[in-house]
Image (cartoon, rainbow, N blue to C red):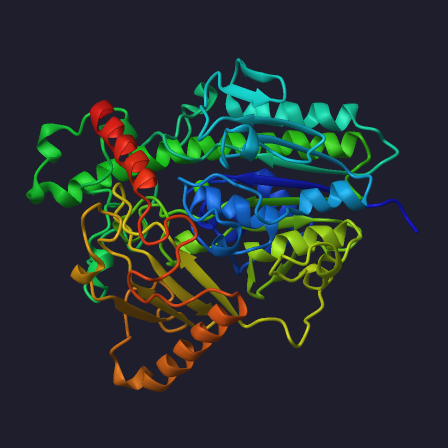
Length: 504
Ligand SMILES: [Ca+2]
């Protein structure tokens, strides 16, 4: 038996696959991320199961859906009602474990990182410049740029570890999350104002549900001076200047976003070089992903939450010379629920035995180029922040296959205190992903799709049953954190919104 495998899991925050060279980006260059793809595998259908920060992190750690682990929104902290794969590594192996960077699963003692040998994390969303960081000894300010600092901690851990034992390290970047504050050394990149616009920047949303038409995620009207770090000039204001305003905002938004991505790319290069220098590259699985995707002006939006591809897809690049062939790709449908089982498998453990609460399946055979006959052909998705008061994204669930996507919106109006679900009857969307890869035309009511629609509705219900979730049925629907209404939580959300409105 050879030496056991090390695992380095690098995860950024809100980095969409279409801003990575290896995924065919038309807007930027990411040579170091591309190096992972060239020397390993690019996975093309990895989906998050709830497209927001904290839920994705809880899902990755526990291998469970939000309704099982209880972290269903950015307002919820992890309460460890189910164990994590890190707990299992601590219990069953001598792996050295560490996490550096963004945690975003709570700052209370009860929800801080558990069973990591070392951890240094950002509180909450964290800052880009001179961030405060928390470890077992408390809080301190660390001078510098967050992406550099987090990578420094990772490299230092590699150098200080016990070389006789394997390690599992999570490197979680704050970038490229809002408010997109670049490292000043990247200020000249993408600054000339000609970043290509996405084909759907001016999507008119004509066939979409009312719930989707109502989301507050548009560049035109919802991206404000705080995001842009400047006021919108007078000549671009008003409905008559909408198109010019969108194009102007897009350039500023993308310049800042892509500059923060560049720092991640540089730092991935540092880490890969360090693995080469320390002769660890051959026996280390390096993963690059993001907690979910992001709308980069696609459909006229920024942010995530929705089940459209730009937000649903997690980029995922993996290099592991011992098992993964260079320049390989994988099209099988995988979700972040599958990560825990896979990582345990890589570390020599069978998740069905050591982590029976998890709901995923190891995709290690796919990394070796195998194609198991019974690999799932569909993924289940559920977004729980019912009409949150900032983005007004509706609660919804759906199913995605390689050919189709079916989405049911049910929660619009529910997040607004005092509102009733009676004001919103629910809506459906169906997209033909092969005929309409940009997901521009909702064919749910098209009679030509009646049989497909029925099949997908049945599949959706099967998946809900399989994952022990329940369909929406009005006020009595269980909710992992609210119950029907949690007035304390709603008060916290209202206070936060008031604070944002004050500061903008
Ligand atoms: Ca995120």
